Image (cartoon, rainbow over all chains, first blue to last red):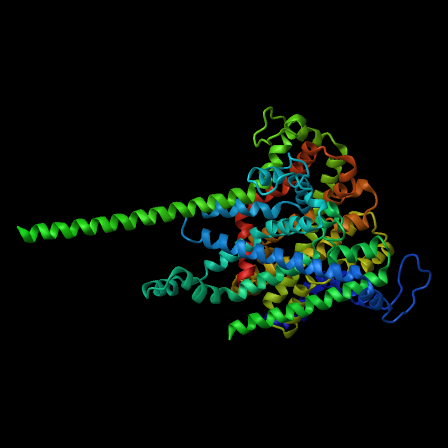
Length: 293
Length: 298
């Protein structure tokens, strides 16, 4: 009988295209980025010089760096948590035996398809600072505010406007994955618990959540990593402002690289980002392994 | 007699108890539907507001109180987008880049995914780990080196800089989706074709790939939608506005060209969203199946 393991040549032929692209455009840029973080590289610099940890030293003395880190943590974790909880609750709702499941699922998933550039323009309109801006109008109508607010130019509100957009855009993905996971939970286990008189809340927390723990953790991790990369909205709508309140790590790195043209400093920020993502991923992977045993 | 009436009585009580239980269940069901419909309405409301504004006349846009259904609906704003050379050009660029990226990304991902699915090598684990962690790598930092690579290959201001950039962003997920589809194909079919004298390459192209059509469709849709959505590469690697795809093209002009012209901005936003929404709507079944199948096994 033929064995696929016998042809190494075919194996290499299969992975060659992806390997070539990844080596050139993922692996090399990553390694080279780490190297650049120790140099003064810039298109305006005649010669590239090794300057040791100078970029890192400059970075930690810049107050904007710490503000940016704080914003990134706050915006990414808050939005992902809201999105994950809302997505999971929606999945629970749709999994409770109601009819038209595929209709609801498809309707909600439309949100995931809306391009980020559209979300940015749309958010500018929803949060328009005049009383015909729909958010201002609704908040006024329900008596939450007395006069129209300039949400996107107020550092307290602008973060929440961005968080709301991030959460809104990720709910469909969270819902679809949670729903698929919920459908895998063996019904016999849940039925048995019901017969034993367990309440709904108890069944959910003691049986369903532990079964789904791994998949939910991985979903959360993937979304955090993806949200860190996202910058369309903070780039086009708020530009990182007002007063740097929506300056997040992706935008900060991008602006340092392609607006200030300081490749060395931008790479140093990128390295911090990379280290943070790696530590966070390992910690999460350990959490999800712990659930297996 | 008394025995019978006693029986009747208990029966009645029993019936009433059943009725109350049924009523409760019905009420609970009704509540569920109410909450489900309510959540969908709330989630879709920003999109509805976008569509509503897109068909408003300027006076309806700034009317107070705001109205959901315009007094005089008009399709002029939407029509104006199609006679706007810039928007059409951006849209063509986006569509073309999206299609090319889908081919390059899914094509190379299919090879890796098949290799990972069929060969039991220790290296496979590391390859998969590399692709998964690639999603976490800081893209703006990597773009610095990509920029100089594209300068060296004179790919700046070409579609290929975008296609390659979008490929590295989408390939990890495409590999993930496709591997799960390949895993589901029984190896016996390939073995039979091999005995019949087909080469490994022929088997892959003519036997395996046609059987993974739903997986290819799911990953191609994912790649296209992501490419349509992507702004950063278009902004950095393309300086010729004729060559820019939608997101970067719009972000470069949006604040200056459309100040306060909300009905036109919303019409443009609608026109930008409709192609991807339509694609998703037509292929949602295979798409959702592909995405969730990957998630549950990984």
